[in-house]
Amino acid sequence: MGPQRTRPDLGGVPETALWTLYTRAHEARRPDRLIVDPEAIKLVDALDYPFRERFGPDKWDMADGEAIRTRVFDDELRRFLQNHPEGTVVTLAEGLETQFWRADNGQARWIGVDLPEIVKLRRCLLPESPRQRLIACSALDDHWMNEVDPTRGVLITAKGLFQYFQPAEVRRLIAACAERFPGAVMVFEAPSRWLSTRMRQGRLRTPAGTPIPPTYWGMDPKEGRRIRTAHPNIAELTDLPLPVGRGKVYGRLLPWIARTPVVRNWKPVWITRVRFGDASGAPLR
Image 1 (cartoon, rainbow, N blue to C red):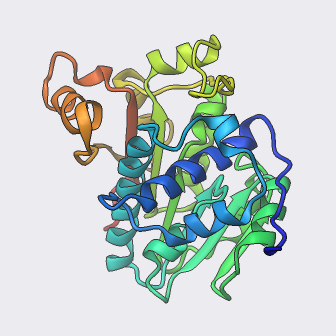
Image 2 (cartoon, rainbow, N blue to C red; image 1 turned 120 degrees about the vertical axis):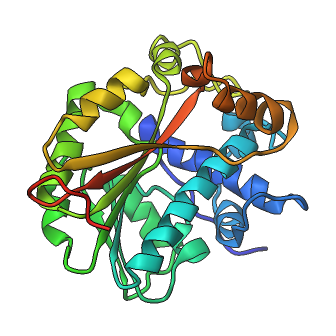
C-alpha cells in the first residue's frame, strides 16, 4: 500500500486552484514542456482527487495556455528580483501555485494570501521556507497589507483572481496597493471582457462538463484607462505579450491576433503590469 494521499475539500472558485495545478503538472510531464515544474507533479500525485472526472483528460490543450501565462509571471518575477534581490513577493490568491520552487532566488521574502481553506490545504502539502509566510484572508481584506515590508521593493501578483471580483472592487484594490506601496509593481491577468461575459452567463465548462465559476470583471483598453486613473500613484500600465506556444491556437492563432491591430483587442487573456510611482506619480525603477 502506498502513502496515504490528501483529499481536498474545495468547491466553487477555490476549486479552480486544483484545475490550474492539474494543467501545470500535465505540461511539466511533457517531453516538450514549456515550463519545468516538478513540484506541481508531486502535488497532483499527492492528492486524492478525481482530476480527470472534474476537468477532463490530461491531453487537453488547456495546459498550453496555462504554461505560457505561467511563463509571463515567472519572467516578471525574475525581472523584479534582478533589481530587488531581497524584495518581497506577494501572491494574491496563491492557491497551489509552485512559483517559489520555480523562480526563487534564495533571498526574497514571500507572502501568500488566500482563503482559509486553501491556506489549510497548502500547509498540509507544501513545505514552508523560513522566508515564506501564508496569510489566510481575502485579497480584498487590507489586513495582508499590514504584513508587507516595503523597504526593499514589492512585487504583487494576481493570477486568475481579479475576474471573480466586481469591477469596482478590482479598481479599489489596485488603488489601495498604489497608496500603500509606492514604487511597487503589480502583475495581474484577466480574461477579455467578452470572454468574461460568456463565463458569467454560464456558457463555458471544462472538457469534463464541470461548470466554470462565473466571472464579473474582464479587461480591455477601456478598462485599462479606468485602472490607469484609479489613483495618482498609478504611473504606468503595460499590456504584456504572451510567448509563442504550440499548435494551432497558441503557436499560430494567438500570436497572429497579438500582432494584428484590427483584432489585437479581441485576444482572450490579458496580462498587465502596473507600476506605482512615488507621491508625485513618478515611477520608481
